Image (cartoon, rainbow, N blue to C red; front, side):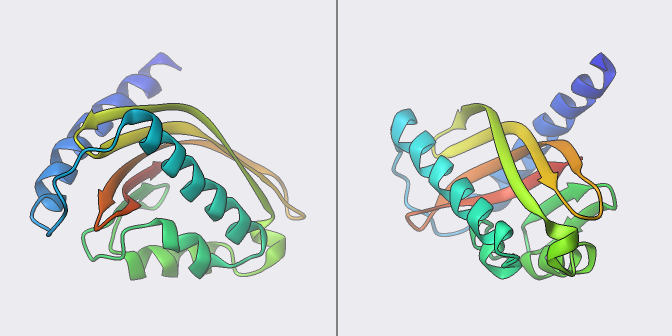
Amino acid sequence: MKPIYTILLALLFVSCISVKADVTTEQTKQTTTSPSEAEAAIRLVMEAQEIAWNNHDLEGFMQGYWKSDSLKFYGSNGLTLGWENTLANYKKGYPTKAESGTLNFVINDISNIEGDNYWVMGEYHLKREVGDADGVFIIIFKKINGAWKIVADMSC
């Protein structure tokens, strides 16, 4: 199991560098939110995602993501670039409520990377008619134009 965590951390490091380079080219406010305010806001985004997912509202779930062609999602099918492509993958993989089921996030860590950039490490648990699914994730949040958005997601 330790090699998996080492690989995840290495990928996270690479993603952080890439995300910083990609996102800072956008027009964003250069304010820094306090860690406690950032954590509370990030948790609210993820709670809204759970609610949307559990209503099989995949577009609503995607509101937590940066609506950009530069969004990065790394999962079992490899790297997906862009908000629209990520949504299309969710729709393909979870076409009905039976496949999407009921989502529960377990957040194990929220840490500041730099400025208004945070990583979230956690678990997802899906209870489904077609069989339960569980996994882990590392997501990168950034405050963009006053809203907290996922700019990179690695789920497996």
